[in-house]
Length: 183
Image (cartoon, rainbow, N blue to C red; front, top):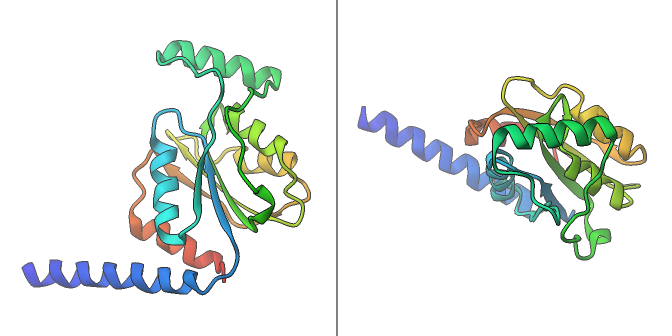
């Protein structure tokens, strides 16, 4: 049994090393921008960063969302129905240097969280590649990726991925990233 576990560990380590080596040869600059209220989307974003070597950017609002679940859901639902885009607390420095941007959001009422809509509305993604990802509690990707495309119609979109909560395995994430062929 110990041999099987050791072999599995070595295989996983070699996969990460070979994937990171392949990405190191990639000359495209990668940004991983994400909004995370509960921590699920942040966890996925950090795993993507581990594999790609890209820069992390946490999308934050000037006014924080309520901590209490019922207050949060009430506010978020209202903002989504009104198309409200909250003011963001910071900007990406030298956004123009990035070629590939992973954009992560929780699925809130079948769409992206309002802070992600703000982020996508504040920059010109023309000629850039967006790779969307979302976390959800059972709703899948719903309209999340389509709504990102509506906000950035001149961007190039690659296949996105939805993750249930933060339960994605490193293998699941690395397999998705390899299939994107980012080289």
